[in-house]
Length: 212
Image (tube, one colour):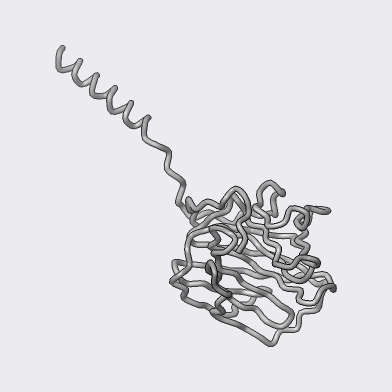
């Protein structure tokens, strides 16, 4: 009888210990989640320049002195698969667009940067100018048309695609787990698709924007 009581007490103790353990994040790879979400899903660098209109995400950097960022608060990954479909209005001098990944704030991230003739992979670090890692030039991209940029990462390796075509790969040891998002610079961008998947990470953005 004493042995049965002892076993019962041990069972209760084990059950209590298991119940007290914290819930760990799900670190299994996740399929890309479609859609652009709503404004509350984003940490933005300028509230008045990021809006939802007619089911599209508008990132308006036409009058801004700096790029206008919109980073998904709820989308942080170690290994990333992200696809964005965007168009630029035929206004503004630069008309640049970027797909951001590995972001922990407004000054630390990587980006697939698209201008009117090139697709460039940049690394951004605090207090430093952007570092160009790889480039594919020779594009002719008329304004007002929809384009698709895609990035896949596995550890330090980054693969970049544009309009369904593989462009280049680069190993970036500085790449960290972080959030995914986008930016516009010197123009007005519309986004109709931002699908994000990968291996979830516990990285966390600040509550308010911290500029470079």
